[in-house]
Amino acid sequence: MKYIRVEMKDHIATVTIDRQDALNAMNLEVISELKETFESCIADSQVGVIILTGAGEKAFIAGADIKAMQKMKPFEALEFGKSGQELTRIIENSSKPVIAAVNGFALGGGCEISLACHIRIAGENAQFAQPEVRLGIIPGWGGTQRLPRLVGKGKAIEMITRGEMTDANTALQIGLVNYVVPQAELTEKSQEIAYSILKNGPEAIRASLACIHKGYDMALDEGLELEVQAFSNLFTTDETTEGLTAFVEKRKPDFRS
Image (tube, rainbow, N blue to C red; front, top):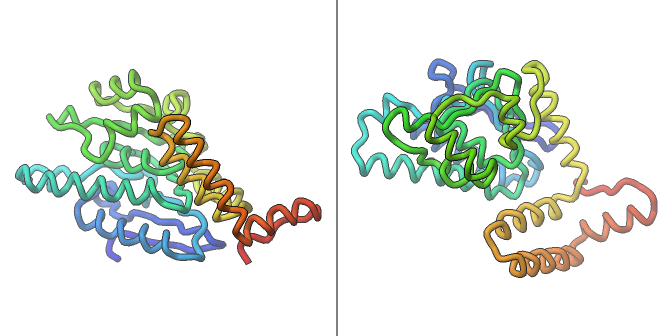
């Protein structure tokens, strides 16, 4: 691929967007490559966790390619918006946890892609923003929908209508990210969390993610029913048998052999 690099190690797929001359900005070609990469990683039984990051220290993803957007007609903008939304849905609905390792700018579409990830870790130099209104447009890859769900309606309205930068520490305070670490420790922290996830049952992780995402917009009773069905279904799996047996036998479970 031209803009995407993938490194596999110990069931961790590290996906790097490498378009440094444009601060890793997204155009249709990058979106297409990233979709293909995520679909491949999700389908790969050897992948347990996916880490998404941007090449270099300046940018995770500095938004969409503005020069390309400047020439768009409404029907082209619709296609571009739907393409970005499809990518974020693939990430969000991944059965493998996706960790965003945010180095530098996560602006516009870059912020929206980070919102679709399951866990966000920011380097101290990270800057988040939904600055679209400064260009006379609005977020088109889920910013108006996911940001309020993550940080609350009031803070999301402020971020989107002001279009200003939010630094890493503020992002942590408002719940936009899970951790802030020195830039030099970003990869290490991301891998630490990935390895802690890999100790657990992959089917249980998959079921947990599905229940959280599907149940989020359900009435409580519906969500509880979804959860208890998923809970009971796991008792038909070798994974659950191994996990429960290992606990009783006072040993570590072997989920990934």
